[in-house]
Image 1 (spheres, rainbow, N blue to C red):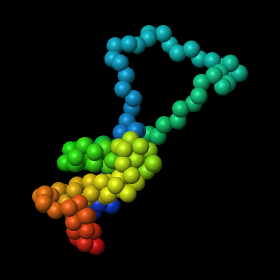
Image 2: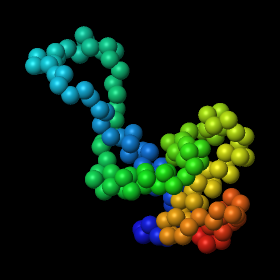
Image 3: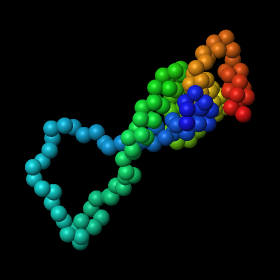
Length: 147
């Protein structure tokens, strides 16, 4: 899919995929701290219920990491508040939690989120964001273009 034709809904999907990929990357560890001792192997009856089993999805593919690397800089095009709202929503946070974290009402948060997606889609099309127009103007214009 060419980036020049992304709609706000497709931008939302790409950012949600980027958030998912970041969660699936291996955990960072402190380098240089390792043990030469082999791990202690317990019998089943000794280890039952000792440690919670943590299941993880497989690591992301190289193509997925490349798409994530392409999508993350898009957030720098937004105001910090808009970028925070868009990223929290991409992480799958609920609207109520997002409202609490930015200190806005639900309708205002939704407007900022939609505007942020439209700004990213607009910039990917190679167009400058109109400065002297309202947020609603850009949202309406993007919805008309993506139909």
